[in-house]
Length: 307
Ligand code: SIN
Image (cartoon, rainbow, N blue to C red; front, top):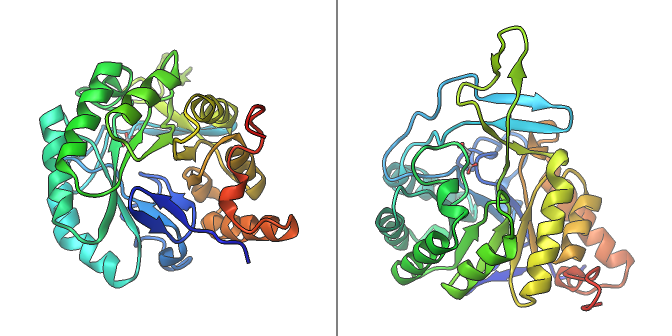
């Protein structure tokens, strides 16, 4: 059986298949379907300093090959997550990554340092890319300087692996990747949702209350794949977690070969709730059938200069 572990910073995750923030609740909602402890990690719903109710409905809409969401970071707040949820998740053996979204550099750093106090949080993912909030969110992730500042401040505050979840809504993803890596990120998630919208023709109005929304699912896969390839080619040592429309082992293999070291499954969970387990098995089988001793051997195989 191929070796499946994925190292990020100082931590070795048991396999490279994670669930994406916002699509798997706080980690325990799927327990009746499969054991979340089998996952490499669960990325929590985006956590803010204080609880948020999120945006008004309508805030979700299916598209022919994806999903528009404008949830607006509805969450319980980081302290209840740390005090109430994480202890239960540790007991169940679930590997937790806290996805955090601050309103300012200082708030990001404060939240990162709160995560130090929680042994069950194995790593922190900085959400500098949520397209659905007025303050912060994607506005941070589309500017090199704010990506650098927030990553640098959290690197100082946090004694755990640090992941930065990049926005795809930029001209040059490698510029943001460079800013995060130079400022101390151990890994990059490439990428959050693409900004989109829908119109309700009967109402002659935007279909989503907040007007714009983040597009995920198979529709965005080629865009995310291109960005993973670009980032890995520019920064061969970068550890990339690919996120964008993965619905099969074949999709996962494409992302690994484009340069990912791990993957995050998001929207695909809504149609196939046990998809991550199918993909873990599929990756193991592919490696075994192709005589590969480690899943990490797949990373970047399709990048021209690297293969
Ligand atoms: C949301 O809660 O609006 C989605 C989170 C995100 O895109 O980061």
